[in-house]
Image (tube, rainbow, N blue to C red):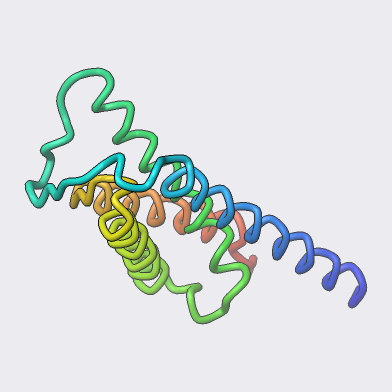
Length: 133
């Protein structure tokens, strides 16, 4: 039993590492430095046409794994509000990095949608991994 628990934890660790690498590739390293500049502090500014709405959905989907897997790795993030706040902080860190490296626009919509995605993932994780009474 201990061996299988350690294998499961190792597998989750590898998935988390792959997830974080993919996040950084998608949000930062896929773009040339200086290719994107700008700040949007207007909430819901990115909603509109089909392409903009696709970006909104992409941002939500991008953070669902965060809310699902991260609480399994770190016990301190197993409460929903804490996990959602961690998703918010991680998203904010990405947006600030994009702003400083000019590899993406700093948008509050992205932070909001990423945080929603982390919340959805956390709820799914809570339902999936809930221990029976």
